[in-house]
Length: 586
Ligand code: 5AD
Ligand code: SF4
Image (cartoon, rainbow, N blue to C red; front, side):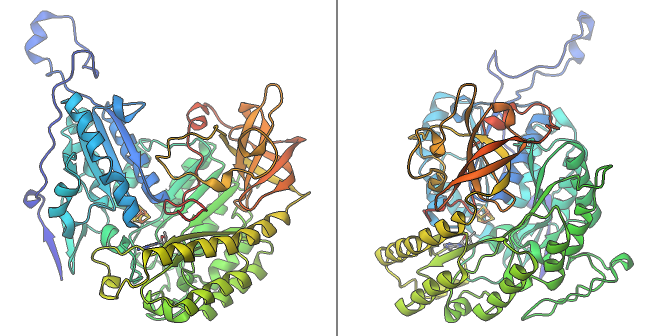
């Protein structure tokens, strides 16, 4: 059943921002003539905001949009949560631990509110699910306003800041599909395009950009909260994505990552167009969806790869996409990966388990045989491609023998990187009807056993790069390890063995410890000047650990810098975070 809920019936209040402190915020420029006094606008509070983002790349991308809207509305960015009048928390709900992290900060946030009565807190992201709304106030007592992910474009209006910036693109109504409340079908695509056209996406890097292509998820994975928090799949119109890619290319971005919970099903919900008449791929298993005459991911990748510089090189040298579901990974996509020079030689292909019974209970809709067939085809088409995966251990009813099959599977596939986590029951998901019967200690044991098995495999995969030259897109000035473990730390970024600085790098005079990624998404530590940030540097690999490489830049191997101010990027955290997890599987 599809039912429209008018905007006026919504239960959430408009949030009042308290009047400004005398020195805080900005006021409108005042004309000198006294007689105009009565026409002057009331001084408005324009808060200093801080956005705390947890979880996946989609959340990071969403936060860039929210920050941009706040800045366009005249608000300023606060350097810390403590210095802010408005805290926006963009939550993840993929595992209980992710939610617990924010629940655990409620006391701290409450104390900040006591010290600063004008402080307001907005909570959005995947922890805000309609069926849960009653419990939200109880679990997050410091929060003033809850917004579902599809309500994020309304942030400004709901804060009462709309008058300061003009309409962002009203969204208003919601739709109920079954028991899930989601936004009106197309508004996320429309508000995204408006934000891109208005130049208000506050990109957190000037080198690498996120580019959302599909919102929501239609999959039936029984453990997963995403379909309940983000609703059904809605693809962005093809031309709007290509336009955004063109804007990014013109702005000098070197790397673009196409984002979606399942990018491989891109396009199936878009209107039929004769120009896509050659697209004839059907889905691989289960439900057959007619993709004929609609764009698919392969078509989109070819179009973005086709944006070229005057000398014919791809204008965006590195194109990535995440996340792929093995069920929808078509031959057309594999051919596009092989044909397009900008597509990086790296694929994240979550398998979740190496046992077919567990996969069936997980509702993954493929068998290990199907997965291995796809993988063989990809490896044949793109030799040397880096493959990473996600694994859940201790899923409902997972026996020791079934877990052992996952270990044997990892041994035979030999992944470059494995992101593993213990199963965490999520309220409202279909798996709540199955007994969560693997004890916590046993889940932990299996997780450790899996990571211990994978470590030498990762090392072996990385050793294959020793002595070779790799192209590194430098994106981080390495920091000394901090003791504030607020965000998961990628322990794998630390190199074992000799060397004193981060990553085992010993910077010389005028140098700092830097890091970046190869096209195959391998983390590489190197020493060099800070102005290498954002550049492509050729590095000779001299040391390989299980999670990272280290090498010496080649004297002639630093590409021209196309970019302006890189100051912002230097302060970005360096964690490469797939679903909020470090390679240690925490
Ligand atoms: N428990 C543990 N891990 C989960 N994931 C998704 N849902 C759960 C859950 N309930 C993992 C999957 C997915 C990744 C993003 O998070 O491995 O691929
Ligand atoms: Fe939401 Fe999933 Fe991203 Fe977590 S990983 S923020 S649950 S979409």
